[in-house]
Length: 156
Image 1 (cartoon, rainbow, N blue to C red):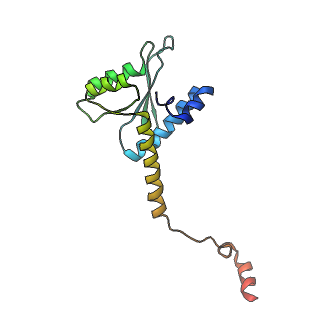
Image 2 (image 1 turned 60 degrees about the vertical axis):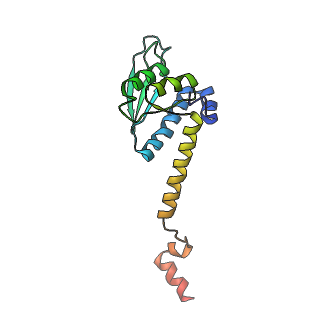
Image 3 (image 1 turned 90 degrees about the vertical axis):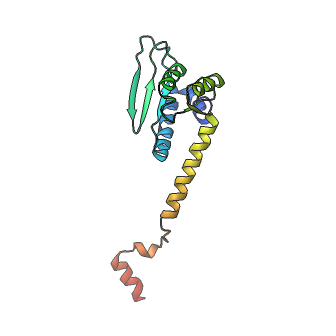
């Protein structure tokens, strides 16, 4: 849902779905580090014959590949039903029906575009933070000359 809602990932997925998934995982891993939340990404593997559910720890996030005959939506619905009212759960999806179901389970929704905006805001916030923290030093060539050359320069 997210991959095909974001142009950059959609274009990548046309040639290589795995590369688009990896790119999304990397983007969301950075976002998770900024938000300091538990983040789970769910990918469909329901068409994979004999596929079993896999949960992979990648950096600081959980990547779930659903089992055969289970869609990502089905997995998300199951999880939100279990924890939606006990925890602060936000699901990123632009699927209207899925939004209604997860909100009925007590979870909040974020559209794919809203998630992209949140990520862009986080990136800008990080850039601003480090820009303000990093002293602006002038880079003068004279600062990089060795002692012999500096000595020659001062004798002139």
